[in-house]
Image 1 (tube, helix red, strand yellow):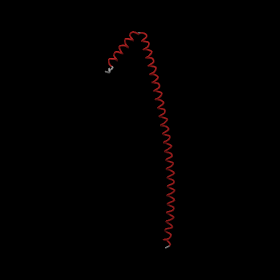
Image 2: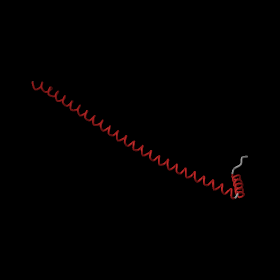
Image 3: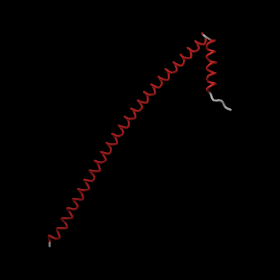
Image 4: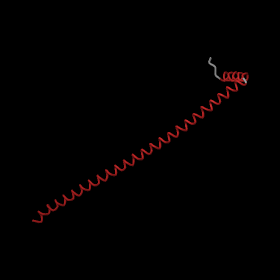
Length: 114
């Protein structure tokens, strides 16, 4: 009978050791998981910052290009205005006739209200 009384004590010790091992394993895995999550968050933040920098750079390039096109258009409009003004001064009668003809044409094409 002494073996029967020792068996539960022996099993109790093994169960206790097993529980300690399980607890240690859970703590180790929790620590590893936390480290992996931290690393993943760090990589995500780095990738996010890089994407933000790339988007800002692209936006800056687009803004600069649009500004250049705007400036070119402004210069061309100014040159066209100066050329038109020069032509009007050179040939005033012809310019007036062209303006009257254009006005007449637009008046004919424009629908009238009744």
